[in-house]
Image (cartoon, rainbow, N blue to C red; front, side):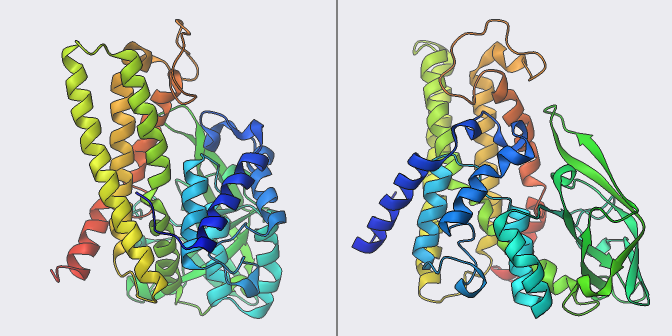
Length: 393
């Protein structure tokens, strides 16, 4: 399905496609770039986009954005996703950057925004805690005012790529006597500050992507508070709206669906009784994906006319993650015995598989994708949001 484009937008799409083909680094084309690349390798494409002026499509031009229309932003996201490029670090560009330029003061904007754009600062997200995952209002990490500093104590968990981070943006409780949402503040913390400890969590796919972050008597300057004290819940909801909207992942799912079709054709004979089952399931997933894409195109058209998308972010998060999980599950089933292999134990057969994400890496992708319906606000919570906002329940 294609968005009907003007001549100017079609020319822009062609420019984006050509730029990706000519400039995306070959060394970044690995099976699982999120976990297989070093920090420096992960930043190669970020820096290329920064030099081009395309690093922050959603940002206003006054803060370093390219000044694109909503349609151009959609085209860029669609083309980079379908090309399989590793997106710029979302915690920096998509999440904390917009919070800073929307709610931060002039000094904070001048200090942090240029370094986010250039990639000099790598950010991670300090939201989830043991006992405070989907229910973020239950955060217990404390920040107590002591002169011109806050003293922070607490424990953040599932902190993605914290092992690389220079800074962490945290939800902290500054008024324990207030109602849960009313006593939270949004604080920026330098990861080099004494008292910050990062410990790895090895996930079921064998990768080191997430971490525990412990904060013990960490002294944070008051100037690193975003907006007003105890108003952090407002800023947190703003950030999560941006995060969830990007989770539809249509380009990514389209790529993986095409590879699933290839592997079924290669691995399963047409007279095998399971062949028809796979073809039927693939058709169902493809229809779901087309429906989600049609919805996204409709929302993009509405946004271009200045219409608020409402609870669409929750819908995209639910359906986008469910579809991708189903694709990885079918792929894992289709590779048969090769699905027993992990990165530490590659398939001994070492035979040809159609595409870089198959063989033993398909198992890792299947396992890693289980998290998608949990992070960014679990899908169960998103169903509740839709029930309240759309159905009035």
